[in-house]
Image (cartoon, rainbow, N blue to C red; front, side):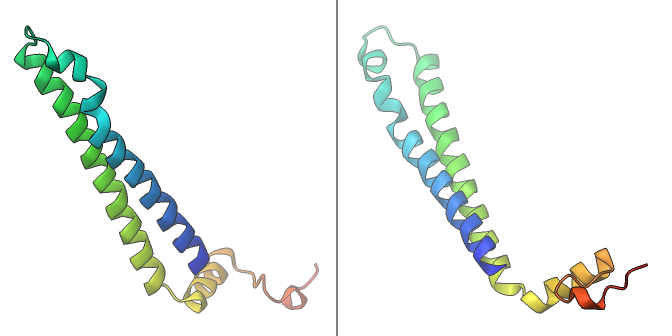
Length: 101
């Protein structure tokens, strides 16, 4: 169970870092637009707002990854098995305990 949380945490952190890097490099794609003499303030604001949005989404994904890793450390495997046993009513670890009808 812990490996699931670790894998999920790593994937969300990598996704967050991808968003952060894309936000960091976003204004360089519009360098031609930003270097024009007739560039409007609205266009400049739009470009930097898009970049800021991507960075903030990336920070959110990284934070979610840290939260998932923290939850994974707090959860005990025995507690999870007990909850599954309660919810499904069968002990999947010991099939000989299940009675045939």
